[in-house]
Length: 382
Image (cartoon, rainbow, N blue to C red; front, side, top):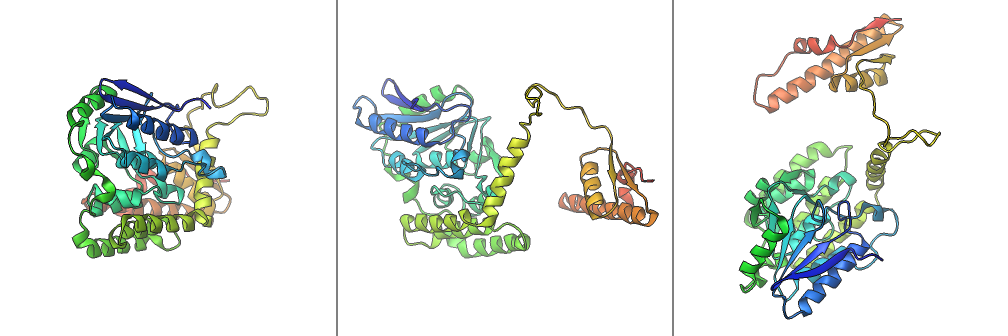
């Protein structure tokens, strides 16, 4: 197997660089490589601190999603890699550029220090796949940022900028220069300083004194969207709750793992992951001739669309096209059905406009304000 992580040295600083392009996904080879490099750095007396970084365009961007299908968790698993990093007898600095999402952020949280390039982004997107951050993410995250922040980010899957990550305490320092050199400079400064107190697993949850109120409010917010919807957000909340209520960090991890098992074996997770892979696959199309494909063909711009039938499905399709700014002709042989379809579209547009303007704190618009948009739907009778 090609080496997917390498250890080099600059003076007293060891550099563990992940090399698994294009996004340095945390595959079996990467997990094995990081573990081996960390152990080599620990045993090298010339190395006093370690910088963990990614080669190319990004820090480890996240889990290897191809492992979701069956060859899942070939050892070492990610949790054991994080234990190796956190328990290293030398301080470890995560030097983050590009994206650190999901498992990538969990790796960073296992390090004793976190540096982030000003252009980088981070977050926990697992909820969109019907799962939760199950490599200790729900247990570590509320120990570096406020409990309310952790709940909001994990249950929404929202990505944030480096600036926001720094303001929330997720990273220690923002840098704008070469990320590896910045990491080495920082590591030189902290190499001789005590660091064991910086182990995230030993820290208290931030905001735990108001935990009950925070969880109650979050539960109300999620419950309003949960009826008939995905169960993953609420499961994420329950996992985070374990960080506060479980007697030890290890018990919290087990609680997290139990909830992850429930999600992974649910129909919802399988459906959301199927949709994820399908969306990726559909962008890589190829015609039967084998010559025409997504790589050598540019799509033509859609200037106008037509939808035949003004029933529930037809109006829904027309609404989707209109929402993308595409002028749409709605065709229906029955004038009564046509009028009903256009009216339904008008109500949907008015509702969305009203919802958007209310969210911004401005005056809600009336149904008549949707007329300009509905005008794009040039209704015609066959």
